[in-house]
Image 1: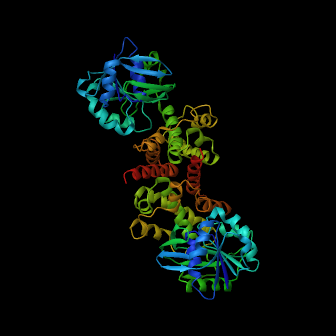
Image 2 (image 1 turned 180 degrees about the vertical axis):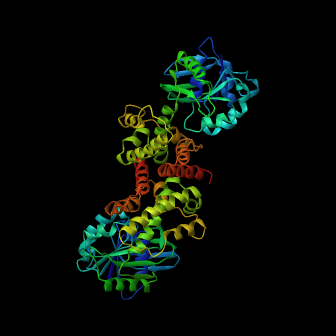
Image 3 (image 1 turned 45 degrees about the vertical axis):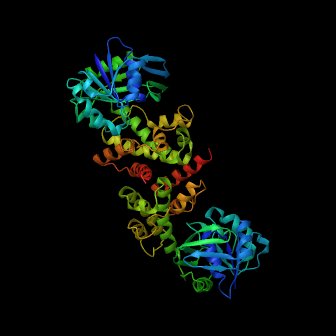
Length: 306
Length: 306
């Protein structure tokens, strides 16, 4: 079976290097960073941290080199989904493409370019150390399932999940994978932009009583939007917030959006709180706090341009 | 008549230097900045910009030096009201004390130390250039009136207003001075913290459609809190927002709260949005967006301590 990972940043690299361990899977790594691609070609893709291994995917920045693949795993930042998937769509004429990105709206963007789409949510996290080397910071589960408006079959989802699990990334295929996705979106939308706006670490955002009230109010709006879509969350996003407040998980972690703000990079706000607002509008649920947070983060992004 | 200006930063200095022009008013300037006080003692208090003049108030950092005064004019930052007025209260045993500070809650703090209090709102603005020298940036009106729970008489208010007006600071005394105060508070609370959180200038906050929606939603909460108190605004705070958006007034101005954030100084958030929230709670009006903004700015302040 052939799998192409589209976008080999931290999360994409975890999938590409892990899957490349399997004898029955041929892995392609597509990324526009030519230095990263060259390093992978020369010395392989190295993971350190939660696992120490070197995978040897076939890496390229040239979409024309990609063979027909059974599966795509999209791991680019959300705002790059459309151009990235547009460029590689030919490789998935008979394949199914799965998002393992943050936020909501990515599967919709993929579905504009390919026939069969898989909804996915992944909790493992890492950071790029340098060309060809990613540090694996946090282990975690992945859940995938058919993307309802343009679905891959559940059997296909199970086949991909089986390969990921055997490769060391525990993955479950479900008929309805929206619960874990919305749980993560609600959690991220409630906490990431608050870290970005206050410059506080994840745990400090969650433990301050005044900010925790805001975090929970943002989460409540997200839960209402999920409920209006008939989505049953697999567990309460507040649990993830409690973990951080109790210093059990990621207390000192700077949210990726805070990292973006510090580096003055465009954030994923449109796919986190922006997604909550958009789905809320479609389903008649008011989301004034998420809307406020979107405006504040986009205003902050605009200040860098001045 | 004797007047003591309590706190000779930018706004306090406009009052102290202007009033010191009058032959029938003896002006004392009380400030804890000894370098500033020494400069005023040596060369007088200089204003440049909207007016060019040198006033010669009697300046001191020693509250014990103050004689009994007919009037106090309090111009310290809101969070310093209680200690400053506490230190000088003896000078106003038979006098009336007027706030010309930002926000709401200052008169309440003054009333804990003196018998007769005047509610005040002033629009002139400036900035300190150096010891003994303040630049007058923006001219504007001042409105004062009896502070209802512990009022000075309207006659006293008129006497103070007359002196200020003759000194070049047009001032009106009204039986109910809450309208202008809440108009300014609502405007400041709707715009200042948005500039502080996004780092955008005043005009850019007001002209971006997404931020303008947030600004107006914050103003709407403030208007509801004013209405619940039976306060009739003298005009719609949205007019001040329109002026900034249309580049007529203060387009490039950095809100004082943004200046505080850039200098990592404590902000006046508790007396702006915090005041809207507090008065809202007392009068049964929900203010979720103002509450969110308070939490975000206080979180940002907390990040400097880490």
